[in-house]
Length: 190
Image 1: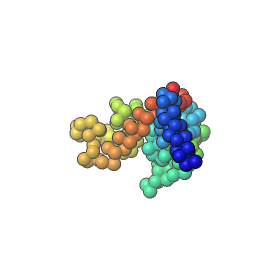
Image 2 (image 1 turned 120 degrees about the vertical axis):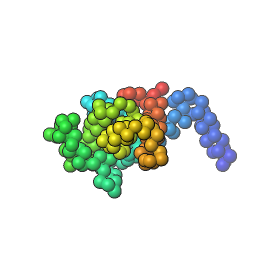
Image 3 (image 1 turned 90 degrees about the horizontal axis):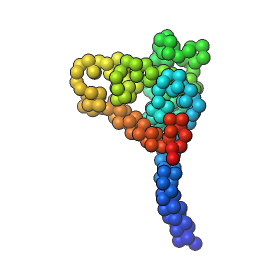
Image 4 (image 1 turned 45 degrees about the vertical axis):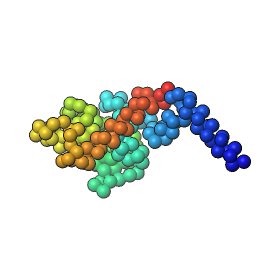
């Protein structure tokens, strides 16, 4: 009986792996790179002109999709935003403070709105994706400071800023997986 069960599992794995992009491996990979809060991500990313797949990569890296997580530094929610940063985004007119409160960062839709607004701001002030990713970890001003010093690209930060360099690698890896697994509308890719 046991041999029959093992054979069945081996067959299921073999059969699933042979099903092309809809096979077992891709389905298993989607468990590692899920999408939750789809409508909030699509609405906010469209409003702020950011790639929803990139938003998913940031969420996965920042919180692992846990809306209740808080950092020791005070960052909150899915996209790990600081309340002061959220307030600044309202003050700058990037987030409608009557619709979204900087005091409600545990709410997924609110957190996603502020995260997308921050990415929009970073995209306007920086010139490349690596810079935007690094700014999400270290801040826009810090990335501008690094670039002004002329030390090279932000991708060369590993010695002086290992946390940000590691963050850059994690987000880029996650972004690549999301691009492979989902469409821009966050539907499963074929």
